[in-house]
Image (cartoon, rainbow over all chains, first blue to last red; front, side, top):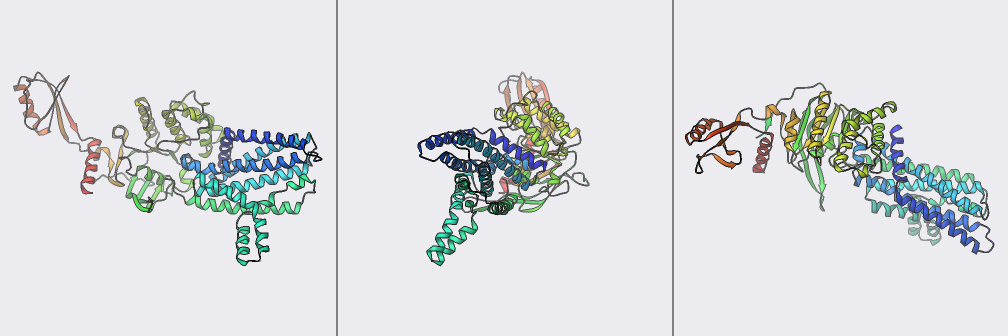
Length: 255
Length: 317
């Protein structure tokens, strides 16, 4: 466990010493301020626009940061050969992957906290968002991004940074569309379309499970049953992705 | 010519390769290319072993198999009697890669602390071990400098420090003198000799034969993926005198001896002859009114042995 934590700490240091990360963070804060201005220009919204757009921005930029960091985390180590001296130490390859994943998810957690705190402060200038729903929505966004990290990890042990980034972005987009696609397939009445959309629905992660922004916007009560299911789903799907990444990584020759 | 020399047996050798080979699929048609071929090697505990070969001979691939970074296509790789892919075996191994690349966003101290943690150095001992290593590899006073600001020579030194941080019994160094100035190369040679004095086994690859000849007690010569000879340097290099170099002054301009290569330099006329012809040459020099300044016998060098093996492979292939 000590080795996993040491690798996670180095991953965290790499992330926080990356200037691009700060540029993205600055951009998010800027966009939240713009959302606040838009809220002022919208009749009768009473701060809803700030919270709504702000959470969407956190989600979008969080996903971009996840892809940026997640894809680089292994493929860059392989390309730059920095992992040779690490794997030559008494470190298992699964430990290395676990450390990387832990470091990334911890980095994302801190980013979520910083961005969430900024948004909450700005939104509160207009109307204080419901704190429980706000925190829970952010938490589920973090769970989604952690799952996306595992997707990026799987791709980055198999291919280079560009393709890994493209594939992970593809999973992010399709992962939010699969429930709609499945519904479309059922309504089409065509067996082939229904089969394909259902296969996509079950094969790719259903990332819409983690979208609870409407509970903040419309001040709805938290659906704990749904949340529990989403957490279990993320754990199971994430474990499968990690296992697949582990199998590929363990068998790989580092030339 | 394939030379084979006996190496004293150890109960558990630090390195044992038995008929090891590695092929990679390369190119558009994914053709198989055999980089290492039927390599068998035994390294004795406490020795300083030079793994010699030209660029592309398969040295780095062999080393990566010793570290579990590459799985052999056939044969058996044992490190301290175990499979190097196992974490337990690698506890006793330190490694410096060729052209080392490190996390350049870390400071030198953070970098060594990270590797100390991975190597299982207890927290209480880490600071002392790191300070000792900075001193040993000549990097005092740069603990808080990020690795991105390190020169190539400094990168090589910090790489050496991370290889030694876990106090390993076997130290594997891939081209450790690469990129170092003469002072740095001497320091690395001294570190290797000190490791041997402390009872460690050092296995290092190089294509700079003078480095190997200066420190090694055992070598293996790898040519195009195959071991051509292995053993103690004293056994491999012919003890007999191969040539004698004579330097003389005051010889007339037209002085010549059949079968003797002459070259005029500032310090005199240089001549190389076989050991058997030295008497006749000296008589002719004295008869021509010359004064003999020096007579230096030459024995076979590692470079000559290496080139002989390389030429033999090229003639056969």
